[in-house]
Image (cartoon, rainbow over the protein chains, first blue to last red):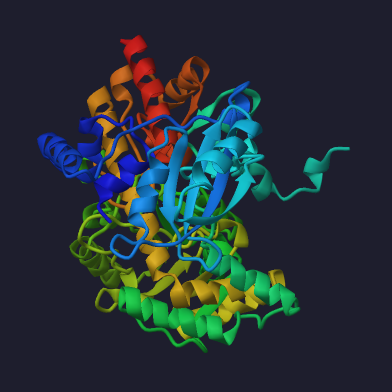
Length: 161
Length: 389
């Protein structure tokens, strides 16, 4: 895998000069590559990882499994597009699973709000033949970062040599 | 009671390690960010841990043969042939030890008797000197120099040889400087070793961690040197297995046989669980080494670049996971610099003097930490350096 992408996928706050040093490339080269990645739609943006469990009234998240009937021409894409068009839908995946086809993560202020969204907006779609809603109770790890047991993030090595 | 009357004079005369003091300060302080630890931040690869667990599940909880399991010795033999081009007979030329440290101790005790001189290039890991003293040998320090990128030169070596010189310690890739010896440098050393009829203990524990195109060259791979060399290596650094405590020595049968006797009486055998895990590491761990090496390389470049920009000049280390910047521009001693840094910015690094007097003017900075951690520490060090101006 491209080392530049590997580094910035984990840390978005290095300067181009630091990235250049790490990769042993000229700084301008790194800037050009990042711009190219943005143009090609490989770099889709940066955002901050927030541990919402520590923020009061930060709402709830659910993982929704959707069993759908694929369309003859477009397969699962059309239905996925409809699902992802809602603002409260955070992510949508097509899964290789015998139980369901699409998985969506959905955010809402309350459990009721999400339940209502599923029953009124998703279940009613023609292609959807079944849904299962899984509410998230604790976020242990996200984007490669451990959220839950913060002791895990601390130094566990002994101070010897 | 005055226990000094009972204690061995040589033991009492050994100075405690210079690193200790800084760790004590760091331990009492909140929000300390450290770049001082000398072990990988990676955990042992999962497939290796699994083999250790599996061996326990099957109830393999007995001693191993004194020299280590035969399968492990065969794998070590394959590994050295595969990675470093040197062949050892698993039945007679390999002993598995409790970490590389035990192998160093066994080698020194097997070779050294009263009055023998042991040449120890410094800055280097702290164990060679006390172990030599305990074996009644005389440590002779060779101070390597920044202008030679802390390599040992044939000239420096020649200057320290006397009729009593018996053993040269060759600690490369080097902790704390990150220096490496390339083949041509080793060949120059080999000539002197041959000429003066000496033995060599080549501590190659960081042998998998070299950067750039050339790989580490084992001293035993230099023409004529296999018969004069005891190679020490282990699993701690290359496979992130420090806590498993497993190393080994490779060398001429006559020497390994004597070392195995000492090992047999002092240790019995290296940890059984660790040996099972190590077999897996040697069989399927090459990709893990490459992954970790590549991560270290990225960090190394970041950290060298940052120190140079701060004005703390730093030659580019090509091995291990340490950089050894010069702090002379601050006008402070190494110890003073490190102490002020820890109090002012809560960053712990180790004064170069902990690795020998000639480490004065330098500090050891470890990059066995995540990029995020290194970035934060570098920002703090930068602030400190600017405040001192």
